[in-house]
Length: 304
Image 1 (cartoon, rainbow, N blue to C red):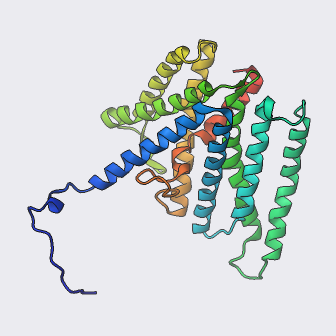
Image 2 (image 1 turned 180 degrees about the vertical axis):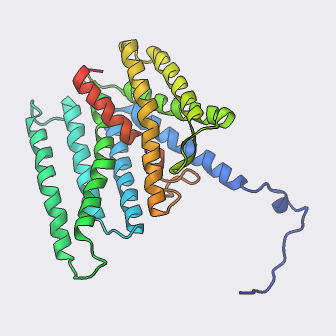
Image 3 (image 1 turned 135 degrees about the vertical axis):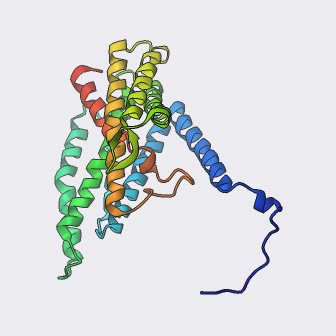
């Protein structure tokens, strides 16, 4: 369609001289700084601000997952699923925080969690029965699977973060800080090493930008930061810190690749636009979805 011409800015005007992409760069810097301050501030201030922040974060991540699934043609029960995720996060928060428990034992919390596992799929199924129409577009059991899959893929791992942040002595922000530092070290080391030495693709069909050289660089920096965390967590043995660093190095990249595969399968670039220039929260915390469950298993088995 041809439209009437409008006066354009002179070639030597400030607008023309402005480098392309400058506004996007500043968007990334500003939104990244605000996000980092909110993240670190909520973790540091208290256990309840940590819980409030990550409760909202995991709910938003799940909502982004459901939205991507809608792009793929599914119709999961997003509102029911997101509400359930908040309940799951609250229960695991109470399970971790001794002071927040209404009872002295964890049995009521565990019974409630087990009840949710049994009841929620039935609620999803009833929703599909109410919405049933005899067309090829209605996929009730696929919708049920996507709704439950989002809870297990996104919400449960993020909720398990509560079991890392709380110890028998109460909330310890240093443990969450340490995990963040390890994840950031893995990303930073992989970026620097991959940019300068990357030649061999790690998973070209899923994420063409990732290389084995980048992964090695990220692993080395993560192990170095794991050693340095002794200054932040002097009571944690070196062996435990290095095991945690190795888990981050191995399972963090798997979390990245899993989310990249998810986005490619539905044909989207970012999971959301809540952070200008950074994508969605699922893009930012995808590594946690693989790291946190493994760390919690090691914590329960070996008191890591």
